[in-house]
Image (cartoon, rainbow, N blue to C red; front, side, top):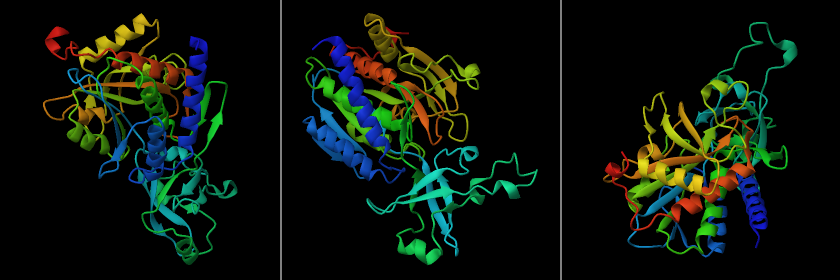
Length: 375
């Protein structure tokens, strides 16, 4: 098979799986539908899967027992809301779950998740323009004051439809093809990462001389980064490679934040720090920076670098397991994070897949994690 054909097929598979996954609702703590779909894809590749008590999906590809073990992971869940009150008139009040931006909520379509085949559409109400006062015109309405109109005439109708306190609510799952390679969709963060790991697993299965790799699709990342930690405590990997978005800075409002270009190739985080509430972050292990830098040069592949405050990933906690796990965040540029339509580039996802496969397959028994060999 020619390189061009292989590349084209990879991109088609990545697009197909990512877009399929974006249509499956999976609020933090309610990832079951997403997990079952990914498990099916892994099983078709011949990988046995298992699910832990928290809901993480894990598949292991055995390799060289003398090489450091690798945990390659991303999260399955998405942010959204849970129903906190059903008003007598049938409107729904909700609590935020995850970093939902309030200024992007009014008039958004949502999906109230009841069960497969019974989910109900709704819309976050936006006060009629003709009744909006001058003071309200430029005001962002706090989420506590918002309500969802799902067409119910009263509370009894909502309850009869299956809505209850705690019911999950997500942005209406959908995706849009903006151009041949650019996709806007719900929960690109991080269904794109899920698609990349499935494709990386496909490509690694036939490779010799690679380490044991644990593929982990974690839960509750948007709910204070909970799932991957429990998986790491059981797997005790030597190396942890986390996939997630990296903030694209090529839009007019983001240029001051860095130099990450959509379509510019995969990216490597050199520094992340939340800076609000959870004072945690990740500085990558130098062995892994050296590894992926070398792979990108050898493949003549661009590898962008990111350093930013305001975001946090599961690796911040995974790196502290046991005697310490050599960790790194790799990812794909993405625009408009946590909004109802995030944007990514398929070429970046393909490049990230190649970087992962080639990098991980270079980890052998001689691969050093001794920091003194790098610092």
